[in-house]
Image 1 (cartoon, helix red, strand yellow):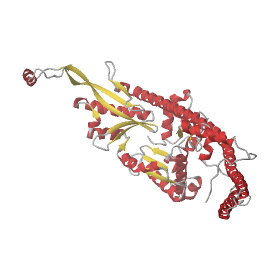
Image 2 (tube, rainbow, N blue to C red):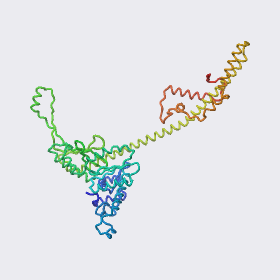
Image 3 (spheres, helix red, strand yellow):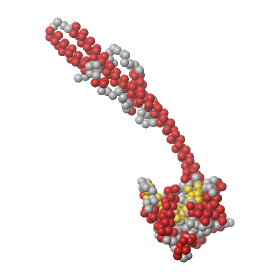
Image 4 (cartoon, helix red, strand yellow):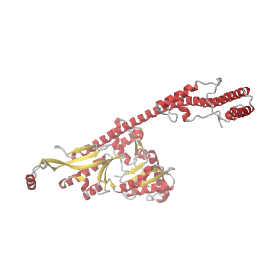
Length: 508
């Protein structure tokens, strides 16, 4: 099937429905999503899951198909000459080289737009050689014409074989480091039914079945691949490594597939060696049952999460082959259920994040309000401490001078004693002058009035909050007592108090 093959009436009706605005996001649209994915593989429909919502929209190629009745890439129409070309040179002339270059640049721009609007990945499944060459040229043109957004780089695999996968990477995103592993793995993957069966015939270790059941298992793989393809999915075989692996690709997800054989248990028949051994060692334990191949196939398809496969088996009335199309639909249903569960988890996670952010914003607002009040109080305390120190020094200087005067008045008549006392008084008056801010105003004048409190200055006024970040702070009983003393001490002093200084020390 080529991308430009004609659509059937049902597909045209669905394409027109999507073009008219139905994005199939409602429950009524779920049954049509498989067909929409088939239209996506023809580049007639874009499918996204942004915001956790399934949305289908018609592309420019889809609009073109509805208007003209054929795919814009249909070679039968692309190669058809225009009326001007027919008049000038006859009906068999090919499009000019400039027209081909223009089409390549147009495809390159469409590719970049699709990458930018989606999740940064575009996959072209099972391209023929002509399509592969067109995309090679388009990718080259995107780089040559600088269509790649700034800060991004374009990478692709599938140049010669396999699916073409194009990715748009942010250069600063560390996820691009995994590109080489992805590119190498892609070389060993195929979704072509015949190649899948051929790979498993060459190395059947991916099918854990007996030799007698192997031909039937290979035929079931062929039927499973066809049924998946009919619903817009792909069965994938990866031959990298010693043992091939199977998986089902549904949209952007791949689910591991395991095909095995069910075993029956039959009573164990003792061999002659076992009988002799049992006589020599009667305490040994021999198996009660043996497991033997049953000839019944088992299919397991992983679900989202670890160790949650869906399982289908042959039963007495039907085989897996007769139910293969139903199985694919059930896989789809499981995939959609996983998507809904994932979306529900994401919604719950977003709501929890929003609640956490609201709670943190409220806490920050409370903290900032407490901190603003504490800043005013702490700054006032620092000013009070500086002013109080100057005031106490002034009171102390005044008291020293009064004391010196009293000493002079009570001086003895002894000349030697008077001379010694005068030295003491002179020394004390010098100390008083050094203490007195009215004589040495730099003590206060050089202290900045607009003091910025440090966290340790704020802490006594922050209550239960930390002074450094918007969170509650643990404080020991000793610290709480210390802060309470600081707050009480602030209320016991004012600048009108006179008398003995609260604390002063002689300074040398």
